[in-house]
Each structure stands twice: as structure tokens, then as C-alpha cells.
Length: 175
Image (cartoon, rainbow, N blue to C red; front, side, top):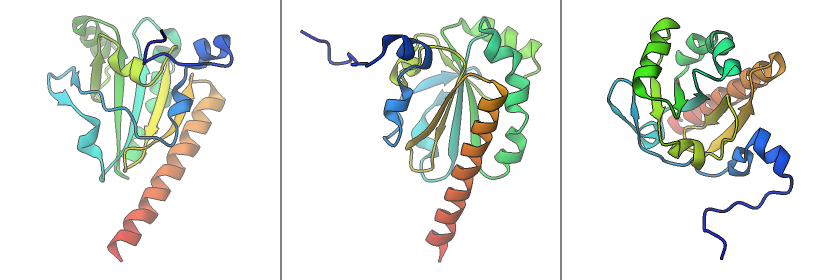
């Protein structure tokens, strides 16, 4: 019998490279309680109704996710002031390795640990890096694989649309 968590894919090579996160678009983002590098418990639900959430899945050994991290995260400050919460999600590494890596990189943003790859599996991520955007209602709205110049432009455009959409929703709620 086929396991309940099995996923049917049309193109295995595409799935292995791109993952299956796009199948979750428009659906509630998976809730996977995890621990942050700081020791606190992290839950996506704590942001529902108040923040757009961006999850950047990475590993210190995955050159694309580390080489381009400063470039991708460069625009964070601009969007944090608009209520966006950014989290780097480390995939499968020991907390000591992650702590050493973020210290060497002078990375000061919140880091979520996914040592057992629970979130990675729930979000159907098969390669790194991956950027996932979740709206204020907890719906997965956008996924980006990689950090090319084109992908960064697409991330910025999607994030702008999400923030503008949430601004309009907030204004309508206040009226």
C-alpha cells in the first residue's frame, strides 16, 4: 500500500531539483513547531493575523545559500519596517555548527533549527536554498528555489505584492 505521506509527481527530475512546495501554494502553510538557535520555541501561528513571514531554508554547506545570503537579506531591513518577519531555517545541521556559522557570517537575524528536517519535509523542499513567503492569514503564497539575480528580483516583486496586499487588507479592516 502507498504511504499517506507519498506524493505523486509528474516529473521526478523536476521534483528533485525544484521540490514540491509549489503544490502548497494557496493552502495553509504547514505548522511545524521548531526550536530557534536562541533556544526559544518557534511557531508560525504566532504570526497569524499580524505579519507576513519569509522563511529562507539554508545549510552552511550549501554554497548557493551561503554565498548569496548577504545579497538576499540585504532588503530585509526595508521590509521589516513594513511588518515582515524573516527567519533563516537551517536544514539538518547540529546547533553548534549553525551557531559557529552565523557568528562567522555576522548574521544577526533569527535562525530556526530544523535538525530532523521536519519543516523541510512538510514544505516539500528537496534542494537549497529555498525562500517561502506566507501571508498574514498563514497561507503559503510564494516559493523561490535558488538565489540567482533573476530569482532575487522575483523574490522582491512577490514580497512587495504581499506587503501591499496586506496593507490594503489592514486599511480595509480599519475602515
